[in-house]
Length: 312
Image 1: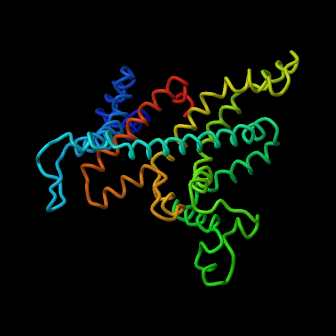
Image 2 (image 1 turned 135 degrees about the horizontal axis):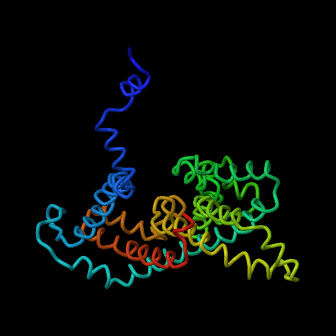
């Protein structure tokens, strides 16, 4: 006669699986290590190894005849990149654009997220939050070409050149457009990366107890002082977390500036790297990539001290 216990044993896991389950219950750290080893190994091999190869590529010598790297190692590419004042000037302008985009995103996200988290009704809150994240659902190139059409000045698109209309959307509707240039690049980058600032700031405000704001009001603090002494210090880690995305994504962008800047003027450092790759001069392009790479490392260290990683 087959008992229920025998049926359970027959239909249950095999003995090796039960032993493995007992082992992981007794040693939870081993289970965590087994779970995290594959993705961490993939990160080390694919991401960090590719960065190491990029640094090594900057040490190769370019064959002037075949335009291909040779086996000879040299530091002249890095020396040439570091000694070029034009390169430093372009990199400084790129950092300034990335910082401007980050600052504007923070200034827009703070009041917007405060309204969403503390003032708007719940049903309105969800709809507005989804609408702010809708740009993430569209392709990058679609948004880039859309902004090129929006900021196009009179005579700056094929319709105006053919005499069938004025400028782009902004000039036709608002009567003003920044045209093609650095201002248009900053506006478009703010539009592209603003959702990455809104998400952590909104999460930080939603976690903030409303009782803190009520207590500040009861003690006589005006709205601006409440924001400066209560809200902003508690939100700094969330703003720092969002700035990691807005700053790094803006710093490395080069496609959008190509579309929104006419002529040979370079607005972003990535354009120089792309042009050097097309020369082709892979070792020198790899040397140029060290500029944003080192900048991102220092920026991440600074944001880590601000508590950004706890809010990602």
